[in-house]
Image 1 (cartoon, rainbow, N blue to C red):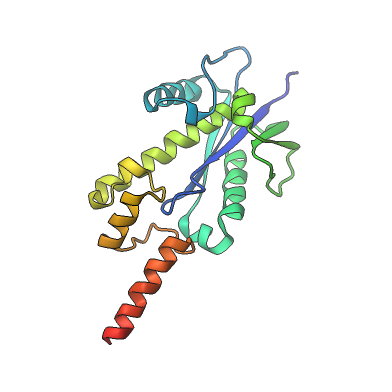
Image 2 (image 1 turned 60 degrees about the vertical axis):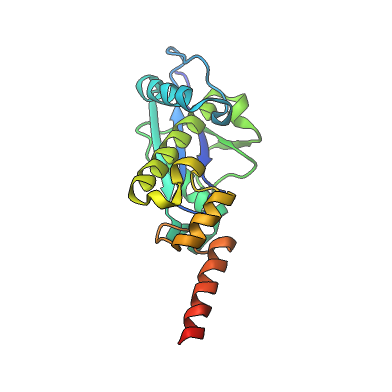
Amino acid sequence: MSKYIAGVDEVGRGPLVGDVVTAAVILDPNNPIEGLTDSKKLSEKKRKTLSAEIKQKALAWAIGRATPAEIDKLNILHATMLAMTRAVDNLLLTPDFVLVDGNRLPPWSYAAEAVVKGDSLHPEISAASILAKVERDNDMLELDKQYPAYGFAAHKGYPTKAHFAALADNGVLSCYRKSFKPVQALLTAAESSVTTKG
């Protein structure tokens, strides 16, 4: 019997806003998918096409998340590990082995290996990186519809110049990660101006 090998990757450790999103994928060796690679090397259009194909052809796939509140409570590394665990736990098939992109493994009971640059080396991790990226980008497009002044569709929540300007003009939303330094600094400044006025 062939082993079920799951690939796991995350997207969204660096942004100031939204969930950190992870995906776990068990590919079907009898139904290969052409063009799998690190999601960052693909165009948005290609990622979307591959994401649909992965969901159709994989033996199992799942998304895991950790919220901004969990990130603030646990820190981004531990929240990412939690999201990875949730993704693997959500798979409809239990993997025999898990390949995780990066140099850290979550504290779980699965037989696993951390692989640096794994999203370019293992198709299972490439597939997970594509699903996670498309999922998180969709989160940002939804946020953009709700709060057009922030420019989420363009910067995807990452700390860009335009994002900082929008944040300074419009203030910190509840979906921001309050423990991240730029957000913390704005909240502190807003508090001190209220105190001064008071």
